[in-house]
Image (cartoon, rainbow, N blue to C red; front, side, top):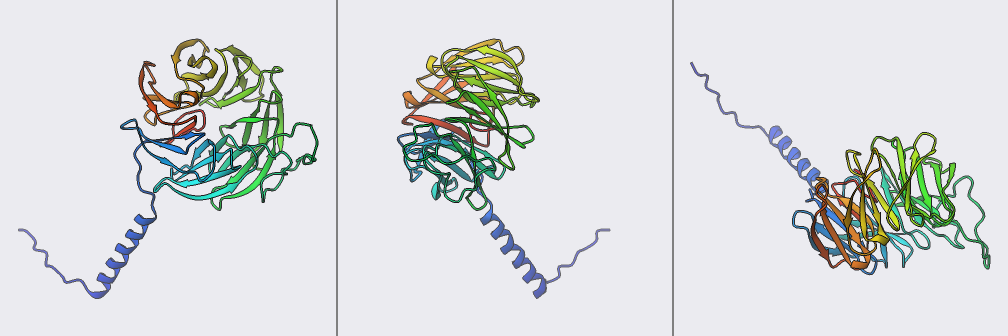
Length: 365
């Protein structure tokens, strides 16, 4: 026999509770970033940041950084904030990706270039010249004396560390000459940077900024790109002027191998599985693909001019290559290496990142 359930009219307390819960849900939805389609962001040195819809492979808009000469870019873990280093105005722009609005500009110092975002921090390379770091920065323990006016000695670069909660520069880490690439150890405790001006790789304790090690590469080799392998056992360092890359043991930084490349290697990244290594041989207009175990050169992808940085798409199916002197982004199949599309309209394209985050020269998932 079926049991009949009687309808009971809700009381005032029940109605009030439902209303409160509904309001709370609305507030939660309002504070939660809206979901985004798979998107690529490409910096153009003479323009802004091109936004590419990765479903259509088309530029949908261009974001204004408010500064001049955006180069290095990075994106926060939740995809909400895009960061761009502006060479011409010596600052870092923060853009809300939900509406494309400029949130703030953070003074950095002369010639900011490379940006890496890790956890709740951003790391930006710059060349202070006669300035002793960015405004508000606390020098690292062994910070040297600032250059004096008229001093012809080269001034080392520095790395500004920015807290992404309050957008404050918390530290300026003194580095080598012309610091280029930035990478982190697998446990995120160490910071490694390449210094092309003095042919070194510096290793720092991330929390304190204290330098732990200084690795010398061959004189005149100009180390630029650096990437840790997905298994955390090796670092790859590209040597632009030596036309080669180094394989370093991640435990003790010994050089395990030196592998020849085509001319001008810079950007470097592993695929997500760690099976293949991709190197941008920028002066040869080529992306070279190497077996990540044997370092055999297994493919060479023809590209445009001055292609320094690249990224996989979030589904790992395609490779997006920023080619500055071609004013375009080249799209190739990440398995067959066949060209798929050339996306024009990004003047002097420099850096590229995606959201959701993907393996690439400027980011990691």
